[in-house]
Amino acid sequence: MRLLSNPYRRRWIGWGLLVAAFFLVSLHRSSTAVLSGELMRAFDTTATSLGLLHSSFFYLYAAFQVPAGLLTDRYGARATAATGTAVMSAGAVAFGLASTYSVAFGGRVLVGLGASVLFVAALRFCANWFRPDEFGTMTGATFSVGILGGLAATTPLAVAISRLGWRGSMVGLGVAGLAAAVGILLVSHDSPADAGLEPIDDVPDRPDVTDAATLKRYVSDAVREPETWLLGIMLFFMTGIGITIFGLWGIPYLVQTHGISVTEASVYLLVGNVGGMIGPTAFGWLSDRWGQRTGLIVFSTVVFGLTWAVFAAFGTVPLFLVGAIFLFSRVLRGGVPLAFTVIKERHPEGASGTVIGIVNTMGWIGAAVFPVVLGAALDAYWTGDTVNGTRVYTELGYRVAFAIAAAAGLLAAACAILLHVRTRAERPLETGTDLEQPTD
Ligand SMILES: C[C@H](NC(=O)[C@@H](N)CCCCN)C(=O)O
Image (cartoon, rainbow, N blue to C red; front, side, top):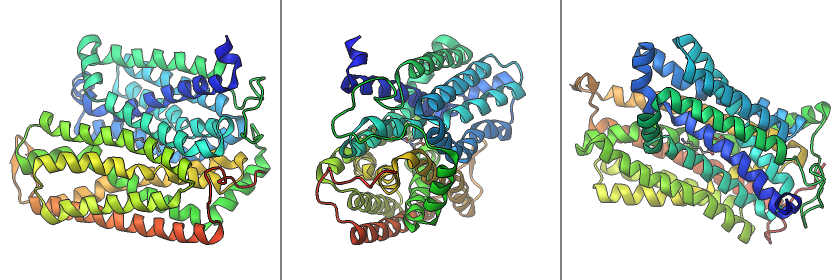
C-alpha cells in the first residue's frame, strides 16, 4: 500500500502501466509481418487486402494523433489512456476471434484507434508527475519501450503463435491489454493531487485538464509557430525513413545484395533495434543532465543522414560493418525523440498532449509516404529479375533509395539546425532545471 501512497513510487507504477499499454501498441503495429502467412490462410486474402489490413493501422494512427492530444489535455491522461487501451484490446480480441475478413478488419481498426492515444497520454502523465529536468529522460524511456514492443513482434510473437496459434495469441494480447486498462484506471491518475497525494518536489502544479476554448487557442498558437513545423518536418523525414528502412526494405536489401537468408538478415535489424532502445533513454538522460535539447537533436539528424550516405556511396557494405553501423547509428540517433520534449516545453503544460500529437502526426505521415517513395525508386531501377515470384532489385536501385534517405536526413538536419539557432537566440539554456516555460 505504501507503494501507492508514496508519490515518488506511485509515479513509476502509473508510468509503468501506461508504457505496458504502449508496448502493446508497438507490438500490434508491427505484428502483421509475423502474422501474414496465418492471415492469408485464415481469410484467403490477396496481397492487397493483407496490405490494407497492415497499413490501415498506420493511417488511423497518424490521423488520430491530434484528436488523441486534444482528448488527453481535455479529459486527462488516465481516462484517455484507459479508454484507448480498452478499445485497442477489445479490437485485438475481435481480431483474434474473427471468422471473416471484414470482422478482422473491423477489429484491426479498433486496435489502431485505441492505440493512437497511448504515446501522447504517457508523455502527458510524465509532464504532471516528473520534474522538467526529468522529462527528457522520460520521453526517451517511453520511446525505448516502443522499440521493445516492436522487437516483441518478431521472434517472441512467432514463438507465441507456434504455441497458442495466432488467434490465441491475439486474444491473449487483448486480455493483457484489458488488464492494463483496469490498472491505468486504478493507478495512473492525472497528477499527484488527482490521486490525493502530496506534491512532488520541483514538479510545478499542473492543470489536470484544459477547457475546450483554451485548447482551441493552444492549437492555433502551435500551428502558427515556425518551430512546430521545423520539428514536425524533421520527424516526417526521420520517422518516415526509419520505419521504411527498418520495417520494410532493410531485409530485402541485405538478402538481395549479400545473398543471405531472411533469418540472418533479421539479426542485423535486431542489432539496430537494440541500439534504438539504448539511444533515446541515454540521450534523454544526457539532455536532462546537460540542459541541452536542440544541439543533441542536430547531432542525431547529422548522424542519420551520414549513415544512409555511406550505404548510398558504397552499395554493398561488408556485413560486419552493416551490424556496427546499424547499432551505433541507432544509438546516436537517440536525440530525435527530444523533439517531443522541445515542443512540450515551448507551450503551456495544459497543451502538452495537443502539441505532442501535432508533431507526431507529421512523423507518421512520413511513415505512410516513404515506403512508396523508396519502393518507386527501387522499381525504377528494376531489371525484370524475379526469384519465386518476388522482385529482385538492383544494387543501383538500393543506392538510389539510400541516397533519398541521406537527402531526407540532410533536410531533417537543416530543420534541426534552424530550430537550434532560433531557440538559442530566444532562450539560452544554462542548467538542466531551467528548461521550463511559464505555465498557463
Ligand atoms: C512516436 C512514437 N514512436 C515510438 O515510440 C517508436 N519507438 C516506435 C517505433 C516503432 C517501430 N516499430 C509513437 O509510437 O507514436
